[in-house]
Image (cartoon, rainbow, N blue to C red):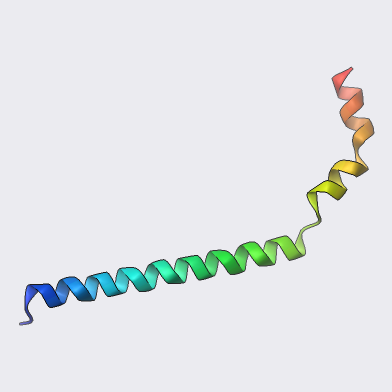
Length: 56
């Protein structure tokens, strides 16, 4: 059986790997989403009439 401190460091190592993996995955997903979805400013400029009609 291994000492307790070694099990603790192994757990910390796995937690660090999980955190880095989550950050990398989130960065890739956000980057892909921004490149695939249209720009928000373009969508807002295309519908100003609808916004004005609702606010009247």
